[in-house]
Length: 72
Image (cartoon, rainbow, N blue to C red; front, side, top):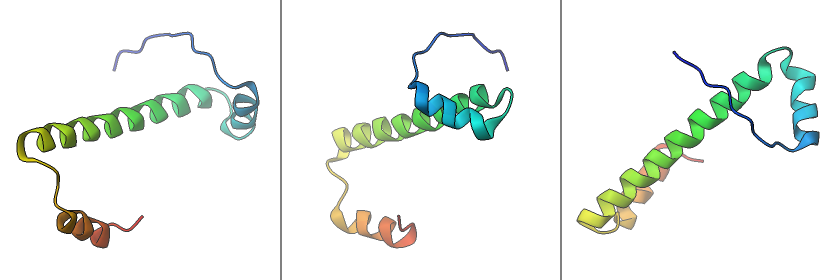
């Protein structure tokens, strides 16, 4: 997969703590995985918003069924 190099601003203390246990190259891997997870969350939010825009809000009963199957 192609990669791009970007400049980002990060909390110095958070980076220092992460680097203690990540080792060489680990920070890029961690940031990439965190970004991937956040993109997936946003895709889900947009899918739900599109569904609700077309069909109305997801019924509380359906949400309760999901919560019962996948508790937090």
